Image 1: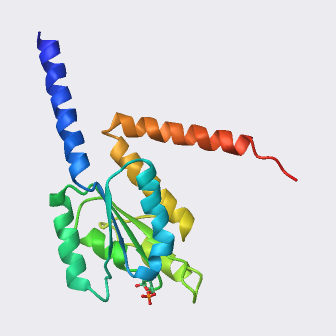
Image 2: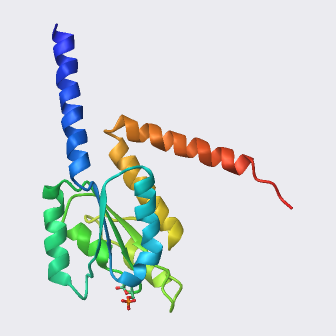
Length: 182
Ligand code: RP5
């Protein structure tokens, strides 16, 4: 009886969380400029492939500082569990986001025209101790991996997502093994 009651309770918790997941975006993708979308659409696309609810916003650490602070400060209360922040050049968006929340922040450095993203990478990755940003690779690989890492974080407490990640890796392996060279 106790066991079945426990399972019922557990199921109820899982169901209510699934309902909540369906209602609220779990991942927020923010980027410093609309010009970053061509890269960051790969984050959104990857999350969509895993059916993870997300929202995308243009917010700048420099051009919209107050709106950025307000949005990030409210994200946790709205059910956001991971924030992906992309910026290029003097790329302070991920760091500023991390300063306003304890929700994990993943930074994606954009491939800037002037310095090919080295500026973005260093601005994003060199955070002072105490305010972490998990920084991914420059450009499209970073955008895809930020989404996969966000999914892996969510999957710690969502077994179905973890299974989807395993399946993704299997398919990727099969695809590579089938490659032929001219
Ligand atoms: C950054 O400046 C943005 O993240 C973008 O990568 C870069 C250039 O922005 P735009 O001049 O294209 O708006 O803030």
